[in-house]
Structure formats: structure tokens, C-alpha cells
Length: 327
Image 1: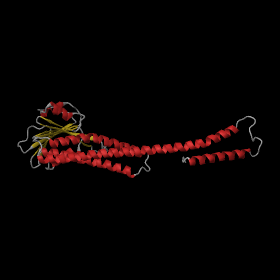
Image 2: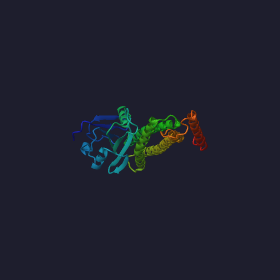
Image 3: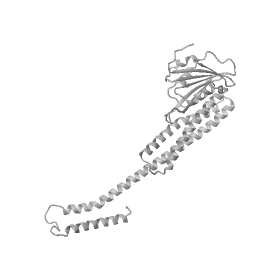
Image 4: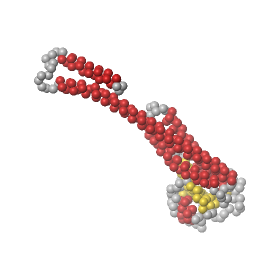
């Protein structure tokens, strides 16, 4: 059976044996593995996002499965359907210049002797399994394939989370000294990254916990227990993300309070200056009125008397403000 596949959709079929040796073919599989000790991994790289289920029609998948594999936007989840498991995972984008919170998805349809993976963008963990297949060291079973992919993606997420936490430590070590607008902008960007990553890691934790508890022959007990460990690891990642978000919020609040305190101090200084010069301005303005009868007009000492009076008023106001502890 053939179908016209978009030019940006790449299909690879791996036939994997119990010893890890792999036969790789480009295009759709022509038949099932010859023996029960083999399974197929069908890798679909749909770099031209489309929810057209006809793309996967050669695989004979139920419509709900095809729709789940090709959905343009997905959240991590596990669905147990007739004949297999639909697992959606998220991982970090390891391409150059990619943002830490730019998380890519991998969609899996898991059957007893077949795994179908669909990715819309490049995913390093999937490439690592492909390279293992090329070197004759592929996962020997479907169960092991699922575990290796989950472990690889979780390890990379953990590395990114630790990197963000270290950046947060650097902000705290600065002790709020010399942090300008650039520092506040960097902290704001860090908080955004933490929020986005948690938005995907939290449901992924639920999906991993669910798959570790799912009663199915598709996963062996050994891999199920190891996935449970990864689920616990993901729980810790969620806790670290929550703690990091709270720490970032505290640092931001401290910066805002420091900025407000600085502005209040500046306003106080301006108010004191205005309070000192207001009576002096009134006095000099009153003496400068262009009318007759102004005292001291004919006295050669009047100017110095006014200066001395102004200095005395300023000194009294300064002493008064010091007594009020405003200065």
C-alpha cells in the first residue's frame, strides 16, 4: 500500500532483534517482523505539521490514535486504548540557540511488537536511540525502548532545570548589589522559563506515574519499576521548579521593594529641599516686591541682614528635620 507523503515527512523503519541488531529501511514497513523476538520501530519525522490522518494510513491505526500522534499541540499524557498505549512526552530542545523552555514533543503508539514514534521537530533522545540502532546496540524489547526514551528525555530536562537553578543561585549570591535593569530583565526571563517548563513537566510526571502503574503486558516489571524511579525523579523536578519559582518571586519582590525604598528616599530628599527653600523663597520674594515702604532699602547692611536671616532659617529647619530623624 502506498501513499503520497509530504516532502518534509521522513519515514524510517527499524527491525530490531533481541540482540540489539537492527535492520533499517527508509519508508513504510512491508510486513511484520519474522520472529516473536523482533519488533519494529517506525519513526515518523513530520517536519511539516499536519493533522491529516491520511499520512499514517499505511499503518492501519485507529482514527483516534492517528489523531493523537499528529495533533499540532499536545500535553504529556498516557491513554490506554484497545491494542496499545498512546504516550505523549515532552523534552527540551537541544538545538543550538534554542531556549531552555522550548520543549519538543514525542508521540508514541506502543503495541506488543511495534512502536510508532512521531515528532514534529528534532529530538535528541530519539536520535540517540537511532544511533544505537546503527551501532547494533538498540533496545532489545519494546519495553526497553520506552524506558530508554523516557530516561533520556528526563535526564536532559533535569540538566536544564539544574542550569536554571544555578542561574537563580547567582542572582541570590549577588545580594542585590549592582543589579540594574539588565539583571531584572534576566530574572523575569528566568521566571518565564521556569513557568513554561513546569507546565509540561507536571503533567509528564502524572503520565509517567500512570504508565508505571498500568497493568499491561507491553511493559515488563523491570522496566516498569525503573520508570517508577524516573517518575519519582520527575516529582523532585517539579518540586525544584516550584521552589525555584518561589525563590525568583522573592528576589523580584526584594528588588521591587529596594527600588521603591530608593525612590522614597529620593522623594524625601526633594521634599526636604523644597521645605527648606520654600520659606526662603517666600522671604526673598516678599522683600523683592516693587512697592514702596520695603524696610532696609536705604540701609547698607540690609542685604547681609537678609542673608543672615535666611541662613538662620535654613539652620533651624535643618535642626528641626534632624530632630524628626528625617535626615
